[in-house]
Image 1 (cartoon, rainbow, N blue to C red):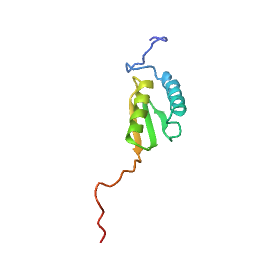
Image 2 (image 1 turned 90 degrees about the vertical axis):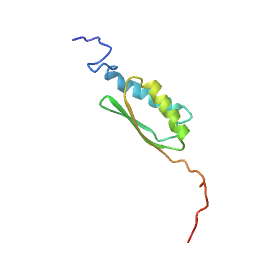
Image 3 (image 1 turned 180 degrees about the horizontal axis):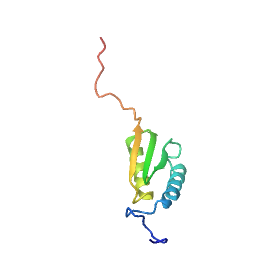
Image 4 (image 1 turned 135 degrees about the vertical axis):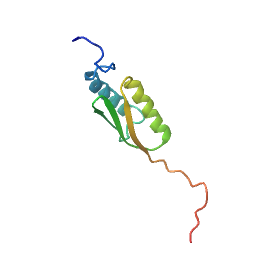
Length: 95
């Protein structure tokens, strides 16, 4: 048993490092252009859960890119909802 091990028994990054990395991620998201969004990041065991609503698919993609940069080695589950309103591609027929 190693007290200085850089990985846990599952072969991934140490779990105690996850809370620190999530806090850093939240700071990074809040300080960027995406800071006004209600994206929540939380640890669920060794998995990270993202929840919230974003205005567009590109915004969601940027958040996911940032999350994966900050949380390399941890599984991430995203429940981000895109609320992008697009114009209809055809006329609506009313009866």
